[in-house]
Image (cartoon, rainbow, N blue to C red; front, side, top):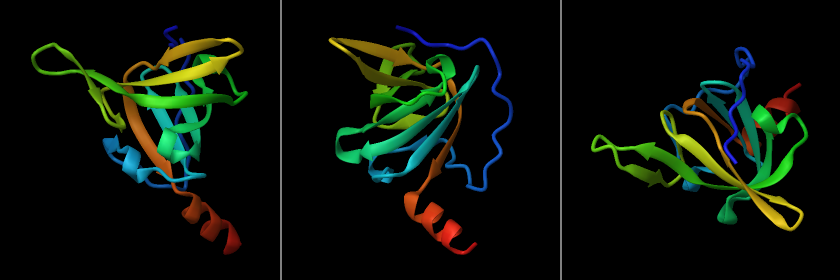
Length: 131
């Protein structure tokens, strides 16, 4: 299943700084949130189990109801035109997720990633406790 939305979710208004062009699996911890902006939409991945890359995914064609998902990696074509897997998320690549759907497994591939934001759980806690 290839998910691409045909609408623009608009600009992202966030207190958190952009993570630049890549987020590795080593950067992600439990309760972190990853905002993935693509050419066509925006996805939110809330991390439950960083070791297994498991979390709750919403946005894009999936809608606003979070679904259990596994972040596999990113897919990008190299200069030689060969498709390569990238360990983590990278702008210019497409994020690959697997979602459990009853007895079936759905594959979700985003359109090209245009921006990434990693919202660390520790930062959210300290921000809200200062209020």
